[in-house]
Structure formats: C-alpha cells, structure tokens
Image (tube, rainbow, N blue to C red; front, side, top):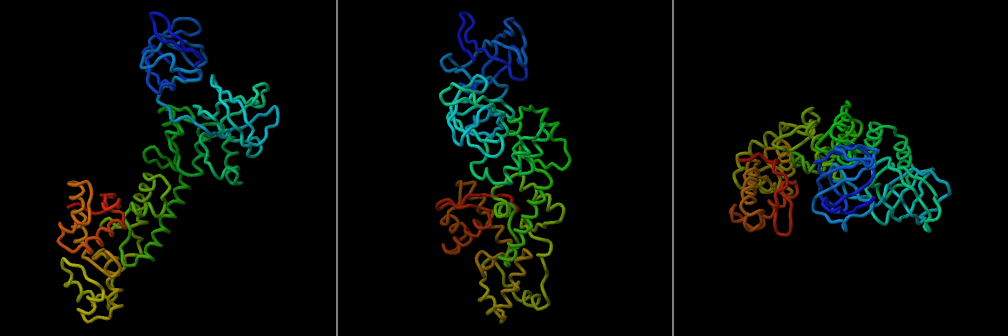
Length: 435
C-alpha cells in the first residue's frame, strides 16, 4: 500500500502479507514493473526480522531494476511471475442494496481501487468487468461501492477467473457455475472444472494459489489423465475417444481409397479446439488398447483393413507388377490389364486400405514406398531450405510441374505438410518413417 525511499537503504514497500512467507534474500516478483526484486531487509509488526508470514504487516527493503515512481498502491509482490491480470471474473454477491444490470461501480480489492460494471446472472452470481485489470485469485474478496463512492452496495467473492465471453446465461452453464460456487475445497473445485473439459494446471494452480507440492497432492486421484500442464477426467476422456472413433469411421466412409489419416490430421478433424497434447495422448492410448490400429503411421479402425476378394486378388496379381516408380490412373491400368474399370477401381481402393498403394488424387496411385521416398525428399528440402516449393520438388523428383503439385497437395491434405503461400512447411514429421 506504500512505497518510499530511505536514505542509506533504498527502496522500501509496505503492505500486509496475504499468504505464504518471505525471508531476507528471497527473490519476489513485483507486478508494477513486471520484474524480480531481491529482499534486502524485513520489518514485521515494526520490528526487524529475518522472516515474515501471512497476516503480518511488513515492510520490505527491496533491490532491483525499479524506481519508486514506477510502483503504485495495489501492486503485488509474488513468489513467482503471475499470469496476465484479469478484466472479467464471476463472483458471488452479498448485497446490501440491490444492484442493476450493467451498473457502474467502484471496486476495491486489497489495496487496489478500480472502476467497472456488473452483469447480473442468476441468484447471487454476477460477472464483474473491470476498466483496469486486477490480479485476483479464487475466493478473493471485493467491496463494491456506487459510482459516486458514497455508499457500499455489496461484497463479492471470486468464483471464477476469466470466464467465457459468450454463453454465460445458458441454463446448463449457470447450473455448473452454481456448483462451482458451492465447491468447498481445492479438490472439489478441480472436480467441477474437469466436468467441462480439460483444465490447464498452471491456471488452476494460480487460481487456487497452490504451489508445486499442493498440486501434486491434488493430482493423486484415480482416473485423471495428464499431458504436460493439461488434465482430463475419465468421463470427458471417454467422450473425446468416442468422438475420435466416430470421426475415423466417417473418414473411412468418405476416403475409401486411403488407409486412414495420420494422428495430427485425426486430431484436427475430431477435436480441433481441444488441448493438442491430451488428444494425441488419447489417440496413443487407443492405439495401445487396439481400438485404433496403425499401419505405417496411418490410423484406421480394426474392421477397416480388409483383404481382397477372390476376384480382386486376381485383378491385383495382374496390376501389382506394373507399379514401378511412376503413378497409374485407374482407367489406364484397367486398359493395360484388360480389366473392367470399376472392378479395377474397387481393387485399388482395397490395396490402398491395406497400405500397399496411395492415391495422391482421386484414381491416381503410387506405390506406398514411393510416397515414403517423397516424404524423405520433403524432409531434406525442409532441412536445407526451411520449406519445399513446387519448383524445387519438381526438379528434385524429375517430373512435370502438375504432378509435383499433386504430390505436394496430397501431403498438405493428409497433414504431413501445410501450405503457406507457395511454400509447403513440414507439419507432422512423425507421419512417415524416416529413411
């Protein structure tokens, strides 16, 4: 709440320790300048001390790259660098005077004082929108006063940081918010958040003001699935897995001449807005359990990879020796072997499902080992030039420009590369085995 300089000591800040403890020599993060500061000396309750703890009035002599003029009342000293401050929060109100929708307010939090507005939701739940962002955590208390700053209207308790901008008035969301407001413990709050989907553990740790040890204790629950800083519970994971299987089944229906998508493409098709690491982990778990099979990096359902019928086997025995380094069109191969075109088309689709050949465009097939060779060429060009363009690929392969573009667009389509202007950038390097 105060900052001043003392001759011979330097910069001193005073305030109330909200939580935790501090000792001389610690490095603390000062939000006003967004830099670390070292604690040179401490006073607690007007007495010199080596340590101070929550609940005490303390003065800290700090050293670092900051001037008194840069520090404001309401700034924080924190153990770690914080996230960005918040402009919107969901709160539980305790009103002395009824509030109106979008009423302007003075809002007090700790030593901070900002203006903002209130958006009433349901019962005693509301959203506060601040004109100036605040560093807040779950269960922090705020005081709301009228815009003339004469009357105290309500108290508020933070229920949720950074809520979604849309959909807050949907009945199911309001019901979920009410259950979150009733959560009594960190474990309860985590369980409620997990009902809606993946939880970012760094965000949750900040919201609940938990250190590493506190988070580790919290995560010792059966059924949790963790990938990096993201967490999922078993019921949501089951929903995601069902979506992945349904997407894969639809893909097989729509792309009968392909063995299946790569894992990155399947992720983008099935759950594009969900946490990437979690989705890839679920795909890997499904591959390990046999719910999804993998063939040379292509993913498919167990019943997708069928063998040839007797008729198709006979056709394939005539067609297979003709597949050299060049691609074949269905029509040309049917004519070459004296086979009905539609029968040849179905046979080649079956061969593609088995990963023997690959369609770069509809009805035009390469041997699969040639596709792997092309992928390695793209890896080489990406390493040499940072990307692949049609001209370089055409020259490296020694084919016409049209065919080179068809091959590159195939790799874009399956997610091995992505196009940016005239360049094709490596996207999923694990999709094909390296040479």
